[in-house]
Amino acid sequence: MYDNVRREIAKLAEELPKGYGTFDSNGKPVIVSQLDGLDWFSWATNLLRARGRAKEKAALRAQLSRSSGDDNGGGRIYELVAALDAGPV
Image (cartoon, rainbow, N blue to C red; front, side):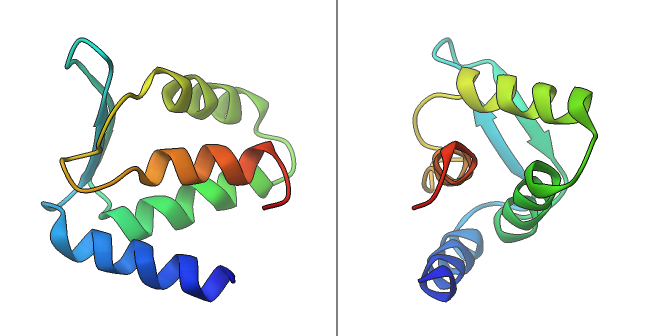
């Protein structure tokens, strides 16, 4: 299943502009990354699985919870990261 998710994210990443970003409900940027969607997904999930780094994880979780709607107009990768962080899929 994880391979299917990675393929879907790769497909979304190809459609998104360079860099990954999300916005809040007022249209203000929340996540602003130079990484493309797939690389950002890998970075975010690796951070959340890593030992320690509590402050970085808390900051990412806050960004995930503030993000709203489509990310860069292409999908909702941040919602997938939040779902994977919440527990087994």
